[in-house]
Amino acid sequence: CKAESNGVIELDVVHIAQCFTLEAFGKLALGHDFHCFSDSGIMRSREAEAFAFLVNDIPKRSCPSAVFNPLLQMYFLPTAYNRRYKMERGIVESLLSSVIKQSKDEFAASSKRDSSKSSKGGPGKKTRDNLLTHIIRASTDNSDDNLIDMMKTILFAGYETTAITITFVLYNLTKYPEMQELCCEEARRILQRDDSITISDLRYTRAVILESMRLNPTVVFTSRNLTKTINLDGFEIPKGLRVVIPLTKLLVDERNFERAKEFIPTRWVRWNEEKNEWVERDHRKESTDHGEAVSAADPANFLSFSDGARDCVGKRLAMNESTVALASLMKHFRVSYDESKPVEMKRRLTSWFPHELHIKFHLRDDNAE
Image (cartoon, rainbow, N blue to C red; front, side):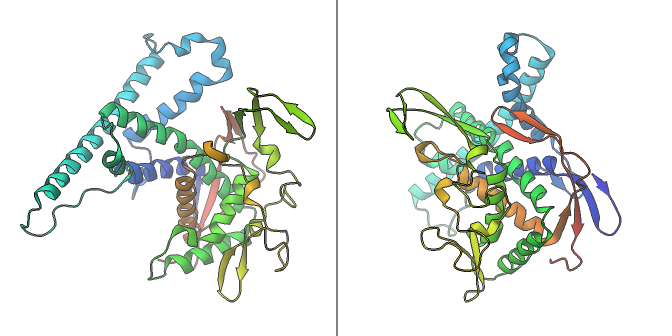
């Protein structure tokens, strides 16, 4: 990072977003703190570095060039890279084993207390409430190997994709200072309420994220195997064919979204004067009747999380993580980017995202507590 005067600091948001996503996974899925954020700065811990290495290993061995290097698939070869892989995997699995053992022990102790119905001293020690503990309570297969595989699958599926979403949202907002102010106003208004709130109350913030994902989808294409023959615009597509769906084309097609190549969050929400808050727009009931620049978006055309029975199982978690991150940042900071610097993009399997992206964070003069 690069600190400047007057409350301005320049940071690589790709790195920040990855650290945030890992911390969110640690707290929500494992009840574990990876210590990426501290008073001394933002830095990956040794455990976090191990996770990041394993995440990066997947596309390294799966990229098109790996087809011509079959040695990459031979994990047993005593190469320097494979030795590093084995070491990093050992760190991750050791951590997961430790957390799983602790969660199992707490669950067993809690079950024992409940079955004995002891009346001594009131309620016993409360067990941790996270994704892992819920799986342990509900699953019939609580073997360590199965739980470790589950946790790694969840992390690997959501770590980089959510980080890419947060990165693009911040980059897009650097172009629209007025939208930053609307996010800030909403965050301060909603987050300071004394009554119970939900993340879905941050409707404008979520609309900004949806619009960013529409223009910069985390996954640039997906595919499906047809289970039956279909007719599409006069073309017969036979059963069993694999169909590739180019999300980057569909999401900016004027037939799906009005003024499709423009960044317009109000296609998802509108300001309600009576309620004094943002409300979601319904494409079935309104078009531009309330003075919005574009007609209401049809959620059925939003395929950034795919759709149907095989859509992204982590979409709710990804949206919640991104919303919390954006609201927290906009509440305290404005962001800017030097457009004279080209954004270097890199391709990884189905993703397309910045290699690094140094954005300036300006502490707001009226910074809220």
